[in-house]
Image 1 (cartoon, rainbow, N blue to C red):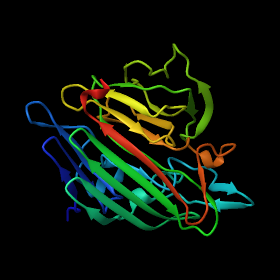
Image 2 (cartoon, rainbow, N blue to C red; image 1 turned 30 degrees about the vertical axis):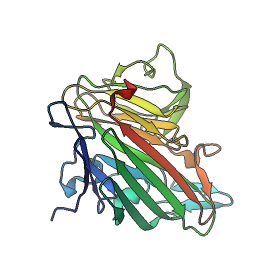
Image 3 (cartoon, rainbow, N blue to C red; image 1 turned 90 degrees about the vertical axis):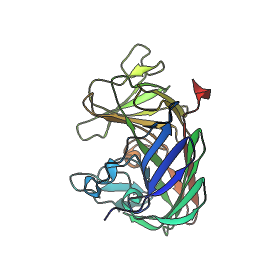
Length: 298
């Protein structure tokens, strides 16, 4: 049975969200000058068996990416987190993307989803996601409220998947980049060399090799220029999402990811827990991401 999709649509764009699959987006399409839909997000395969990462966008709550060492130490306690996905050695991306979300409200341009009773490792939480579609942009608001019994370090973010072609170029600034080891965990934090491979300050084709790196000091926007079969756009994010994870398996992949998140990979086990927000019980962490396909950013 095909899961329910909630569709927002106007005469310029349409977006579909799948509440039962982690509140993920199935598609975001924009009409071109001839009235044909072209994808901005990589369209969902439509097969539940492909898993949540076949969707067009996932929400990341209560943390982004991987946590090593079986969990983390906070205060005087070691909090255990077990792996949450088959084939993954480490827990990854929290669990909101795996849960069923409820429809909390909708009108012609807005849908609100609710994820009650979230639970992974020590984290207990309540999350809400709101989609707002206009003729020129999609705005996603995401919030997580701690339902844990004690203060804990929370993270938040978005995991969109975009079409990739030989014409795809990206442009964004950053100060430093985390290199990864063979387990996709932080190896070293290095400066962005003005002449080096990690400099994307001018429109740059996606790397030809494997790329899965967290860029820090990201100012909150990235311009993506696509070929004729996909939509060019600007991604922007709230100030607390100042880390950008770029995931690009290689030129044979038909997608790449640019993930605005609050913290580097395995921040729970890095000195100072960079980017994580310590939430007392009942306190809320909010964030947003905007996809803008208007001509204003060109």
